Amino acid sequence: MNVMKRASYILGCAMALLSCKEEQSDEKVSSDNAWAVEENVAPRKDTTIVYRWEGIGTENDEATVYYSGGKIVRGEAMVYGATDKSDIRFEFEDEKIIISRKKYTHKKRSEHGKSDDIELISKIEYQTDHHGNYSDGDRAEDDFYEILKKQIPFELK
Image (cartoon, rainbow, N blue to C red):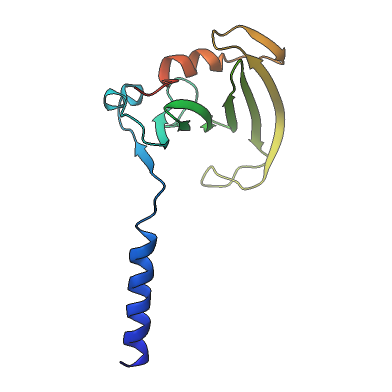
């Protein structure tokens, strides 16, 4: 067997072995009504779902949500406005949800409306319980808990 055939054979075997991982993980990208996630697909072990994030930004924003054992663990979203963008993160713990948002603005605009030259203009972090009762931190002007509750299932069935 020449060197190229041997390398191709080894590469093929390695790819076959890597594709047979024992850990199960689902990744599902939703389309239109993301919160209706096709009857809430039953999770195997860990699940990642990308939801449409409606009612916050000006564009088609998305939230990536991570589930473990069928329950929401954390999520992250990038929300774009006309002149700014926000990086929103939320983590679910037993008794509380920690929500943080970093808001950025463009220092200058390019001819195509985009710029890599961005500046952090605000940073907030606050906590709420699983019923929406706020506690520690600076609550955002937008009620992200209500948006989360309406658009993203906290538990997969």
